[in-house]
Length: 192
Image (cartoon, rainbow, N blue to C red; front, side):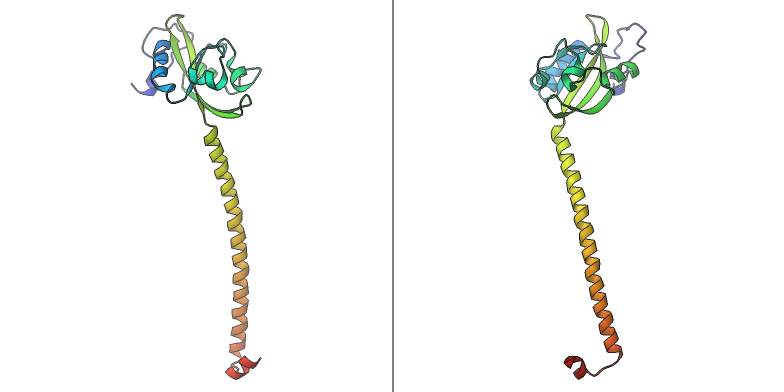
């Protein structure tokens, strides 16, 4: 089964038919134990009202114990859901959604990947989010952009200076050409 099939959502108004279209909460928690905690990826599960129902140890170390709190408040310091909410998009579109956002809570950049899962116990769809700290990547991107700007300035200055030097050489060659066109004897050229 490809990723498109694993995360494909059915119509939200239709009762879940227990088909294998969504990962279950139990499967996701098992995947967390096997993969996500070892990769230092944060993970949280929230309901349709944006309340965190579960979070892994990595996210708890990163942002604190936030079960029962609104995700937008504890992750991004907002008083209302994010304008571009991956969880809401996953819920309405039934697709995996991604965004990159900065958190004033700790000054870090996060990549958030959201998809739907099914909780067999409560018989409802929940939103799972993988939260990856990309602060270092963003710093490197900014450093690269700064380096690129600086190199563009340096190359512009070098090109300008090179043109000035070439103009001087060209003028000198023109002067020499003019002198030699008069065909002055070599002795006269030296004494002048």
